[in-house]
Length: 487
Image (cartoon, rainbow, N blue to C red; front, top):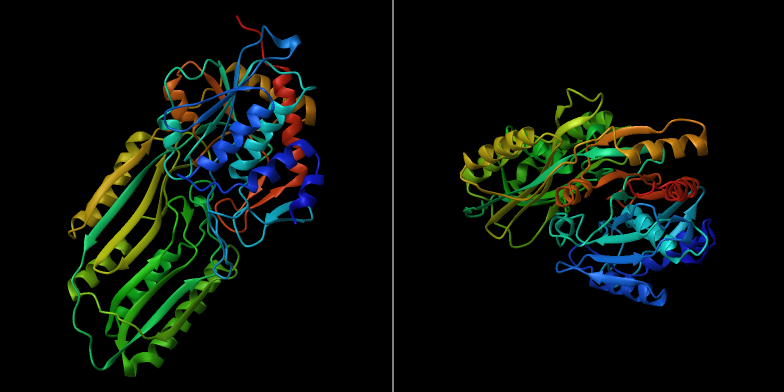
C-alpha cells in the first residue's frame, strides 16, 4: 500500500522514508531502527559508530571537489511520536506506518506519520547514498529519544564529532531557517489518595471530552487549541459546584509533548441528578463549541452510565485535585520581550491519571529564558505541593541561543535567495530542538535548522507536503555545495 509513496520525487528521499517507516521506532525503543541504519551503512561501505547511549554516527568522505571544505554534521532524530485515533487498532511496536497520498500531502491512516523527524533521517540517508551530489566530509548523526527527553543528545559522547557546522533537519516550515529554540523541563506530580464508601443512592457515569485537534505542545501552543484535561476539569468543577459529585477515576492525555486531545472521568453522582447533569453538560458543550469551532471543530462532550468496581475519592482529595488542576497554568505563560510574536514561556498540562489510589500528573514547561523556565516550574510545583502532592523535576534541557552572525546562516540565506528569489524567514521557535544541547557539547560549532512543511506533528493528523519536501531537498543540496573551505 505504501508503494505509491516510492514514486514521489525525489525518489531517493521518499524511498528511504518508506523503508524507514516500515521499522517500528518508538522513543526509548530505537534498537530496531538503529540496526536498520547500521545495515544501511554497511551496504554503502561507510564507517559507522554507535556511542555509549545509542546514538549512531555514519561517516562519509567528501566528494573530490570539496576535500578542503569544513566538515559538516547532518543531524536528525530517529524516534517518532506514537499517537492514533481511538477507533484505530494499531500496534506501533510491531507494525510499519500505513501511508497514502492525498493531493499534495502524504498522510498516515489514523496514526502519526513519522515525518517528524523521519523526513530528515530519510534525507540524510539519500545524501549518504548519492554519488552525484557535491558535499564536504559528512558526519551523519542520528540521535535517539528526542521526543521523550532528548536523552540521546544530552548524553552524546564527548569528542564523538569533529564537524564545524551542524545542519539540523527538524523544523517544519519550508520558508524558515531556525537559529534558536526553547529549553524545557518535565514536571512530575504524584499523590496517593483515600476513598470513601459508595453512596447507595448514587450511580457512576463517564464524562468524556474528545474530538480535539491536539498537536505539538511547543510549536502550536500559541494557537489556543483545546486541552482536554483543562476542559474536563472545568466541567467537573462547574458540576461539582451545583450537585453532589465525586471523582472516582480520570484518564487524560498521553504524551508530554502533545496537547491532549481526549480525557475522561468516572464520577459518582446522585441517581436523581442524572438528567439535570446531562443538561448541564449540554449547556457547557454549547458554550465551548463556539469557542473552539475554528481550531477544534470536532470537539465533543458526552455522558454515559457505567458499571464496575469504582470507589469515590475522599472529599478532601477530590476538592484538592480539582483546585490544583484549575490553578495549574496551561498554554502561553509569557511572550518574548525581544522577538515579536514569539512565545517565551509555556506549559502543557499533558497527562492526568487517577486510578487505584494514585494520582499522577505530568507537565512539560518550556522557555527560551532559563529564569522564566525556573519561575514557571516553581509556580506549578508550589500549587501542587501546597495541597500535599509530591513534585519532581526531570529531563531539563537548555535552549539554543541564536547567533545572527554565523557564517552558515549567511550561506543558507544566500542559497535560499538564489533558488527562490526571496528571503527566508530567520526565526527562533518555541519548540525544543537538539541544537541547544549539542551546542552545549560543542560550543564552537555553528548550526542552523530547517526542513519541509509538516502539519499536525504529534497527532494523527500529521501530514507532509510533497511539493515542500522537493523544495527542501533542493535547498539542502544547494547548501551542501556551498560549504566554505577551512580557514
